[in-house]
Image 1 (spheres, rainbow, N blue to C red):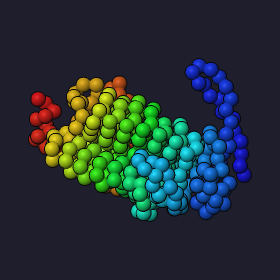
Image 2: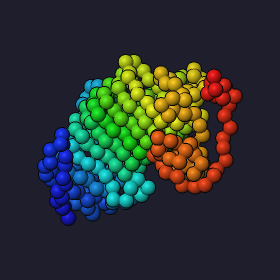
Image 3: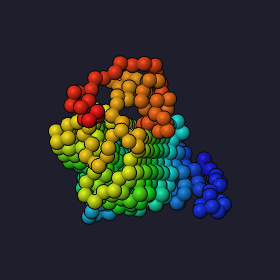
Image 4: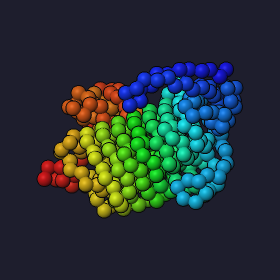
Length: 338
């Protein structure tokens, strides 16, 4: 059944009522609409599309005006409506799967759309649209939070690609084992302004050229309390890269064991200085990364008890006791203490 809800909103200090419909969707098609796309097509701005636990394998082909010329591509869903796509049970039990053949979600002219509590996995560039395997965003101001992007691929922004918008918020997400065929394995911000990237965990992402974890490209952004670990790039910026006319503010981020041949020490190709503003190079002490467990040890420098004013670093809380410590290379130690 389609239900209605009313929320209180506070905008610029004023109080007012805003209403929107809730669309409940199930993987077996028995919800208020048979697919995510069907719900989006019926939705009005401000509606919430709520996914039941399970895996969504839909494939829809459309022509969109994305980052450049109109292109025909395939995704699980497209939206140009300011909707709120979320889940009932969270990212651990709710999956959008691109079957290694198509994108997860395409947001074009979607206003302040939000996406939360979903794992995007096995998503890939498709047809003419090569950017953003998991989510591609264009001319929008999305909030993407409490999601996971796993084993996704795009020419740039294997996990997420955001272009020509403002005020995007990327918060408490995991970017794991995504690949950029050219740039940005995990996330790329391209010609965006005022983006906020905070409390995310970037692990094991790769890029053929640069920006294995994150690429900030001709954009302005603020980074805070993220973890960049074991990301790689074929040229530079294995963990983080800045390119073109970029303005970046960063504090409280943790870097560990990222690699690229042109900056082998920390593999951070941005004007950052470790040891100030809470920027540290240290093993995050994940509980069981070989089995995809990125909770952190109680002894982790990312844990609130050891982070000072930074609080929790990364997307995942403390989930285990002491774990073994990975050794630093001599080159990394020399750079850290010079």
